[in-house]
Length: 115
Image (cartoon, rainbow, N blue to C red; front, side, top):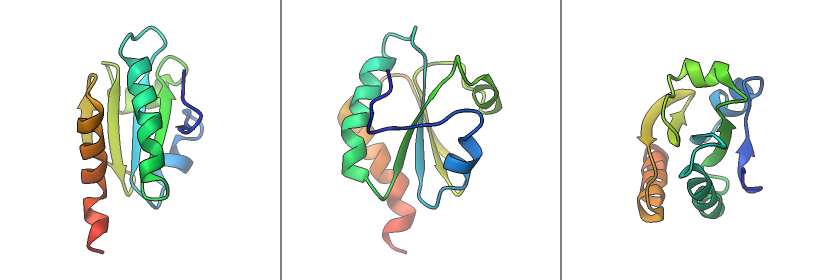
């Protein structure tokens, strides 16, 4: 289900790709059995290009990656976690329209705008 414009992360690659990232990262926690996850992933794929180089948009299949899912206490899908410097800075649980997601992604960059 992941869009090719999204970076796929796993339990094994999470620390290297997400926690060590130099830019903010949005991680889409999803599952195949989750009806709103597909549309959300497609929207994030569309938005990823707008933030290319400034915000990494990643996706993690919760069923295949239970360690990371449990570490961040993700129990509802879709869940979007925003990371800055390896720390969760914001969370969105449940489906949201594209305009809300775009604004949340813009907000994740706000500490970097004036630096």
